[in-house]
Structures are given as C-alpha cells and as structure tokens.
Length: 410
Image 1: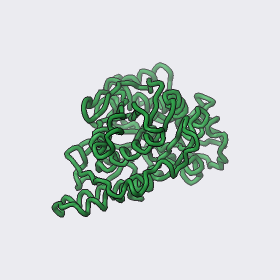
Image 2: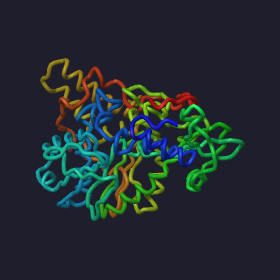
Image 3: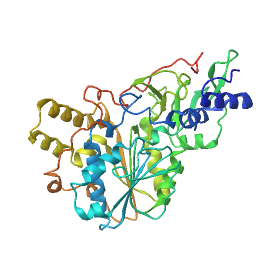
Image 4: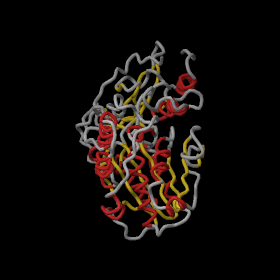
C-alpha cells in the first residue's frame, strides 16, 4: 500500500495498514484537522478563491445583527462589565471585524463593557477589530458572564457513519482494496454510543439506509456549559431536528464534500484539499445542553432570526442612502441572501441560556423602537463580490451520490 501523498493521506494509510480499517470519524478527523496538511490547517478554504463561504462573508449585516444580539443580551444580564462575547471557530475573522465595526453605533457603556474573544485552532487575525484570539481546540474558559456563539462550527465535527444491513445497524469504516484504493466496508459498531444516540428514534429504515452520528456534539455542549457562569449560547448552522434529519426518506444521509464551490465528489478524493461536512442534529444539541445545564430559549431559522435583529430595518435604511445604483443593488442583494429561504435563511439558530431566570424567546430581541433607525453597514473588501455571492454552502441536495469504489486519494 502506497505511503505517498500529503501527510493526512499518509497517516490514514498507516492506520489502515496497522488496523485493517478505521472509522469514518477517524478518517474525517485526519482529513480536516491533521496539523500538517489537514483541510482546516490554513485559511485557504474560505471565500471567493476557496471552496465555500459563510454568512458573515456575504454582507456585514450579519455581524451587525450579532452586535445587536449581544447588546440585547447584555441588557438582559443587567449590563455587566465586563461582558464577554466569545466567538467559537472564528476562522478568518470576518465576523469579529463586522461586530466590532457595527458596535460603534451602539451605546458607549456597552462598547466599554464588551470583551471580545475569538477561539480557533489555527492562527488568524488579531488586534483591533478582531478581539483577543486564543489558539485552542477546546473551550478553555471559565467563569464567563456573557455569550458564547458560533456560526457553522458543529457541521465540521467529525462524524461516525452507519448503514442498515439485514435490519441491523452497521458502522461504515474506511479500508483499502487490493489495488490500494480507499473503499468503504461495514462492521460492528465501534462504540455503543452510536446506537444509544439513535435508540429514541422510530427507525423504520430500509436496508441500505445511511446516516451520520456526531458524538462530539455532546462533549462540546458540556464544555460550553462549564465555561459559562451566566449568559447565553448561540449556535447557527445548517441542520434539522432528529426526526427530520433521520427521516426514512433521507436514504443517503447528509455527508457532503466541497471543492471550489462545487459539491458532491467522493470523500476519498482530494483528501486534505476538500471540505467534508454533515448536517447538525439540533435535537442532540438541545438534549445534551439541557443535561449540562443549558436551557433552550429559542430555535428558529436564520432568516427569521436576522430580521428580528434588525436586518429589515438595515435594508430600509440602505434604500434611503445616497449611493450609486450599482452599489445599492449589490448591498441589498447580499442582505436578502442572508435571509433567503432557499439558502442561508433556512439555517437554524439555537439559543440557550444559563443562570438567566425567566427569559423567553421574545425577550432576546431588541424592541422595534431600538431598531427603527438601524444604521445600514456596507460591503467592504473582505466581503464576497456581488457577482460571486450566489452559491451558499448550504445549497445542495441531501441525496447526492458518489462512487465508493476506486476512490482515488489524489
């Protein structure tokens, strides 16, 4: 078996040679997070020249809405100082820059109170406009009063994959054939936690049905709860509740690849050079959060969420600005994309709280009076050009097929 190629491929092949097979979770972890050549080891995947882009890159109104949300949560916590705003998986730092920029429109005492911290496993922007950056693979903070939030983070957690065979759950492993090509094989479950996660569902799955189980989501929720003394957790991502995620109609699961904004190739091609992602099980985040002491406050679509945080007011304000028609149109188009029901607008938002008595979903949003004169932010050089921002990462079907025989790791 060849030991050539980038480091993630070498390590995957070494482990298969040693053990005969590895779980898909181990394969995905090495492909994405290997320190020398894993997909997320550089910022290259993001943006126009990369493989996908996220909501904050479309328009700064996303960050402006998050700034309004942080301000409202600061009010609900009786205006503490410091108020910690902790961004998880900050990536290229676009969201932090936009939150900082828009915070200049908010009350001075809020600006003084905010301590913005970004967490990511890789180096990125630091200094004014990006907050204090902490390099970490975990959430090493304690005693936080404020808000921990993420955008498109749990979808990148490595997942176990399963398949129904003869009415039984079998795990999908990665091995190689006689020619050295990576292939999928099935076997007994590597951990009883997979069946435990699925035990509460009314399966009814046919033979051949495939799906994913994200076992990292539970420990992650417990980490967040341990970090937070009082405040909120916001998780924005694409996914579903369990009954929809594991619907019998979704026979091939939600695992997907991305390479230069194109989706649907084999996960065993371009290892370390293409993204691997799976839809988030929001039911798991809710139940694991509840067990860890996080109370569910709200669960809604991103489109509704951003509108409640001022997106419509910002669009109305933009129409009143004296701008060239081309610039006004580009900004309006990008702002609409954030709430488009065929793309980003169908992302889900989960808001949870800890140590905040009696807070309800309607409480977390600013009043109409607060938003009525919302200042509209404008696109800058670090946002996607209007001609490019037409393909959200979420815009793919959930039953895309790929060849699993002869998958080349080139």
